[in-house]
Image (cartoon, rainbow, N blue to C red; front, side):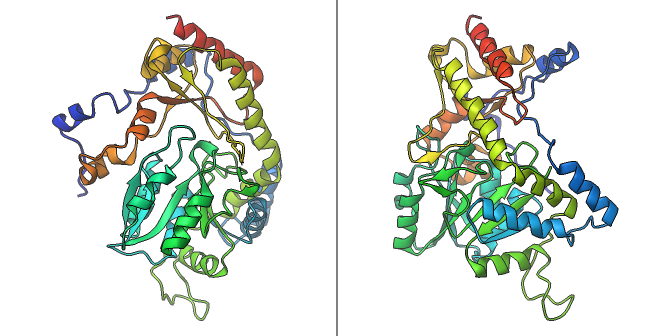
Length: 403
């Protein structure tokens, strides 16, 4: 039986207030029972989604062999500036596929940010390679590129750049380091559909990229993911690995260790309809981000997300840092908002603090990532969010500050 990894009481005490408190479930349930609930993200499915799904059912093409998979791959890859798209089961599978094409094995190392969702580290671990961590930088919350060079060793094979919460990582210096040391650059673009870096689309900036289409993402298929690349060999191998590595020569003949990471025609039908309106979905996120900024920038003790001049931040989620000067802790603010029916999420818990990786990194300190974990939360940010709802959230934050 698989054993769960838990930290000891002493280890938990050592973490202090770094780990977020419990979710404010009771407060949200009470508010929802009273008819007040604003989810942190809601999906907008009022385009061609139902029409395309109906075509799947009426044609009986519901498996991964249906035509919507091919069409979705083509259109989404085009939307992010790539020649090839390989649709798969989820964003983690997409990142694993991209890394697996590199032939990683035990003893290899892959540099990733510690401030990221657990899937980034897990996808590296699935290959047998070791995730090597770097801290975040405090302005964009992305990987601190200045810390990457010191982490490169003779065993380093790749760098995974994560576009955190929709703000592109600083890709040019990452690419320069990779060229200097003969490394692959993989983008974790799970949160960055439509983001731009110096006029180039996130997802087209490295050897390959992974996207997630989970229900809270800008483009969704419910569950799903995609590898994008301009490298024909990466595309060919990823496509093979996705489908049990079936051989083109004969069926049930396997020359790679493959995976069952396929996407269904029904998921792809939704994804194609979503991709058709990517520009509209991006505009909704960015307009709401500007309205949040206008309403929140004068509130004492809140640090708001930025958009550097050379990027387009798509503000997948609108995150804020709750500083000591706000007047209450981040966790207490979440409880006060939950009482008004406003759902929020804490920022990611860094990889080096996660129980399954903690002992590998015991004694390591990544102060920026730890500060983001302690202070960060994101507000309702989905595609259905309205300006009046942004006002409601901003007013609730101001009331919460007053106690």
